[in-house]
Image 1 (cartoon, rainbow, N blue to C red):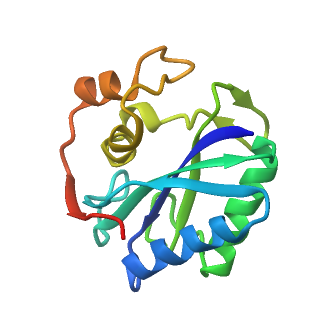
Image 2: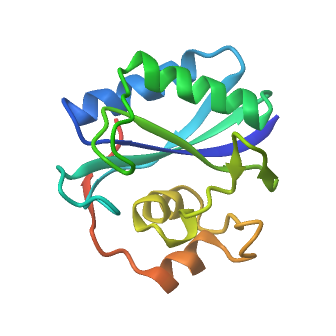
Image 3: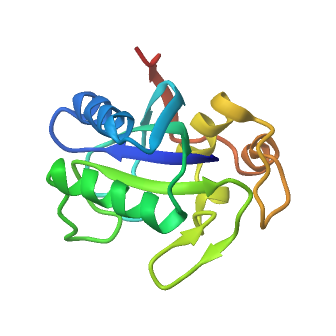
Length: 163
């Protein structure tokens, strides 16, 4: 079993309901066990800023799947929740990104882990630190807590605890 961390975000429709449905779909997969889910954070958009705020969480999972198989599951959940990719970093009903997959570094044409920008994104680091402040970024060689202290948590606000 490999421990992985998945960042989930939504800024269209009923954002909280979409996050909960996505976690339920992860848990329903026979080769994925959701261990813990962070609180829900209200976050400012990054990159393309002319859009509604996001709701973001991080889910800690254990899986027998390879990184690429886990990616396929994440993409199928996005599709089930009607994800449409129109504008890079633009509005979406659901976005699932594998941010860490064990301590592996994966760089294939379809998957890059750790997520290439996770170490500079507070909307990923704040909920990750809530779950595991000591998890080490395998490229940066720093803990999630160290990365968050270097980058700050601007634009990320606690919305509610996960229930």
